Picture 1 (tube, helix red, strand yellow):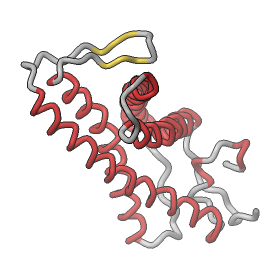
Picture 2 (spheres, helix red, strand yellow; picture 1 turned 60 degrees about the vertical axis):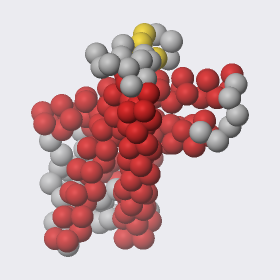
Picture 3 (cartoon, one colour; picture 1 turned 180 degrees about the horizontal axis):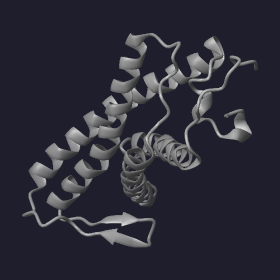
Length: 187
């Protein structure tokens, strides 16, 4: 592919790594979540819940690192050729992704805490329940919020992915290429 004449500043390697680790984790977690809520009780469902919770903790940890990295390292300036409205939409989408990716696991941890359940992390350790009085009805309501936030997250992530593909495949500019690993044509 041929991209513009002057490559813009790219994202730092750590920023790219954290981005792709979160993206892969979300892409694993989403089908696990859909499947685990649609199958009968049993060992498979238990294992999928365990996996989903573990990836939730991983996503929370990675997102906390991303926030710290973003404040310390920052991000390259937007492409100068991009329309102002696109810069605004991009900023809003990124902000929503950060908020939702932090909120999802925190809301789940709160829901699990009201249910009196710890949150496992791949069998290595468990996040203990927060010190809430057990309340199953409130737990179920919180998990309903978790589910709806998940739908919103999936929608916003789809917009993000579509915009990246549009820049990469249609416009063939550097916008998406700045976040790609070098092995995949990133700069």
